Image (cartoon, rainbow, N blue to C red; front, side, top):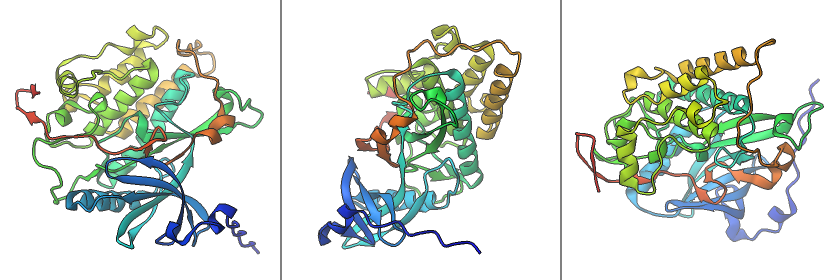
Length: 353
């Protein structure tokens, strides 16, 4: 007979918390993120006896509330090992909240670049998760290094102080500006640009309607960043970045790092095609290409693939606890939510400053 799982004891800081820290069945313990829409707390789930990330809407603005609730509706439908789980959403004492899985690890923005294989395997798994979301009719629209969390565990017999000595699981986070492909509710005005310019597709930069292939582009842009240390398009000026996304051809990854072979370079560049019909047509197709590259490049007898030329930081899976971040935060200090530009866009592809 299977024994029931022992209930986790209540942490002392939860027992000592004041009544004002209670919100909808959760006890707020520590603020771990803040942004223009609201705040994220490390909180204790009284019913399930577990830590959660509690995202609280700070504004009563009707449009922000619609986006906030859309995020919860979309995210709660997604059940995948590589997507942070959203447990609950509701209102208590006039405050709207979303309770999410609390993940320990690094965002891809700060996760050390150690080897091409690790980067490719992480993005392969992320692409599988996005393909799953696409099959359920959800387009993320804001994929970037800050919206992927990597949780690491020591391999059996591995060195926990080494990235290569750990196994890594990637989580896709923050569906804050996700859209259902069949949605009829209009939450953005035509011509409004939502997302992060360095990783968004040309059609998204123009404020045009997008489909799942915009996420394929963003996955490729994020992998480009992992392999080279920089996004395919960079500018401190938002409007210049939006223009470059539409017009500039990114430098090939292999030209930035000679250890990147031609096959991997081609996979990345295909994801970054300006025209959506020239890209990998699904996130699953991209995942298959990345998996085939891993199987070929690291097959027995294959020539060794050199690690990236960037020095890996001294951070193995043993240090992950020091990077305990809540799902839904950017680099542990802010809510990873959309940057919104109601830009004056023209259909020629030029972005007016």
